[in-house]
Image (cartoon, rainbow, N blue to C red):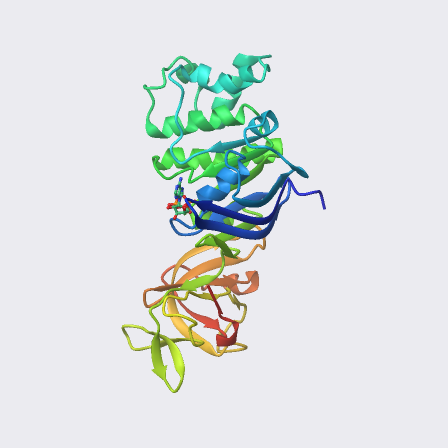
Length: 338
Ligand SMILES: Nc1ncnc2c1ncn2[C@@H]1O[C@H](COP(=O)(O)OP(=O)(O)OP(=O)(O)O)[C@@H](O)[C@H]1O
């Protein structure tokens, strides 16, 4: 295996003395497509800024290509590029915005051609856009020009922070396609934070699920939030509006979060099998996971969203689609607490 492009060790980051991110170890391979998911405030943007070397961690180390690189060093600036949630353009034409980085690093050969190429990657026709001033663009076009300006640099690493949060759906689609295509064509490593779990599952080699600044899993786990109720006879869990029970082990604190790894559904007739809990739910969405070729489903049990893995054999029976009833299964002793 190639040496990691990023190697994180004993990382802790704090704002005004409050720790918001703690990652003991994380490696990212060159050329990998990595997804960051997690609720608001879980530390995704902070991790991207640290990987983008525009912030220094409070403690610990981030090695880039095997070396600790100083924030804002030329090496970092020309190899790693971060597209923030609300990218801004310089008060110049689209051409000058896209050409800026190339000129800055003294790399202006075939400039016009490269600007047009980068714009076409994000679905904008050069002829229509190069002369436009920064203010004559929609939000989606601004986002795409900002991405084109990064892709023109053929970066080693592209960091995307919620690339599609505030744009129309056509721009969102184009931004997603362009970033993945760039990674394929240029061998760029892509780390994308997004609430679009389905998109990340489809494109990622690796998912990192952040929760309260810690890695809680790989994005396929179910998180169940308190408050927890006593179910009697020493049992704990939740009671659904239809009186069904969702049992968990005794919670360590009232606000503890239960984590259930996605169990595979691979039998024609689910039954409890290895699990001690089986609950009927309604399939609400299905996604094909690039890494495993499995279908990952969200199944609503009452109003609780559970994540399950459906093996190709089971999925090929053709009986699973949104709106269907499916039994989710888990073992109480496999639940861990956050
Ligand atoms: N500059 C800052 N100063 C102080 N606190 C900050 C700063 N930036 C972020 N935080 C806090 O750090 C925590 C993590 O924030 P971060 O923006 O990294 O989360 P996130 O997962 O990207 O959230 P979102 O999905 O809302 O963008 C939050 O509690 C946030 O309020």
